[in-house]
Length: 303
Image 1 (cartoon, rainbow, N blue to C red):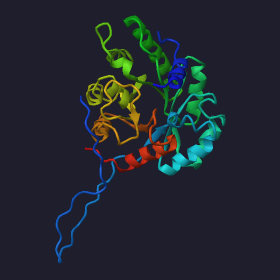
Image 2: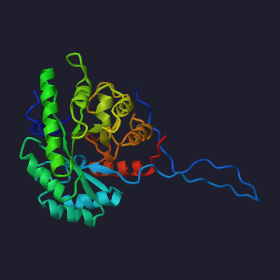
Image 3: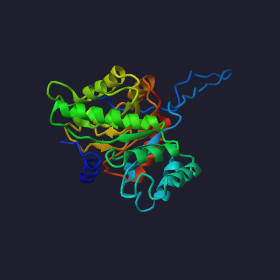
Image 4: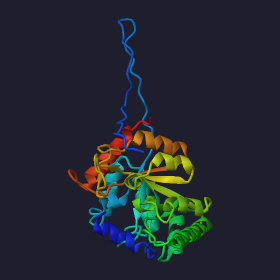
């Protein structure tokens, strides 16, 4: 993970102490029977599996501060209908205020459905602002590896408290995973511990599929074991043959993760929001990568 990303995530928390399958590129049409002069061949159109999808704005972190409105207009043009924000120097709403920001997104045909935020700094104010514009989720993006099992229990208690505040205002709370929570620790898997010790009525989870795989876990097993607990996901691909390399994010559809299979299981087990994110770039700019991600999901067919 890049230093700037780690710095942002560390600010967001003061408590920080299976197999891969080549991607199945869903095609737009299926095979057809051979036609005759009397009966022409018929090509059956296969409908893409997602009606709408979103993007985590951190993907455009180098471009957004320069001209937020221009970038958001481009995202709308690519086909993104949902926006997930993050808390940067200009706040959650890029200096526009929550209601003006909502109006601008409305004009582009988009909705801000969620945002990553610092849950330790004036959290209830952020919840109130999010609720005022019809957002569905505020999300804790990072807690970091903990030193003891009791520290993980404190994290669970904190999440239940955040969930209570969100529920009071009519929105939802969730936690976004990284690889560290899938590594065995003091005889347990921290992510399982969090799932088992947070109230399902108060705390949902956002599965970052890339980080689950990087942590050595199977996304499908978690989706099925904790059905209806993962309500959002980051659709983020991982370089082929990446090994243990952490900085392995790549353009969607060019890596090793079989999204056509995983996202089908996710949808069958309560997933509501499919959100593109990318953290690393090789042969394209962030805005080009955002377009590649949208084009991929527009055509994706679940298997």
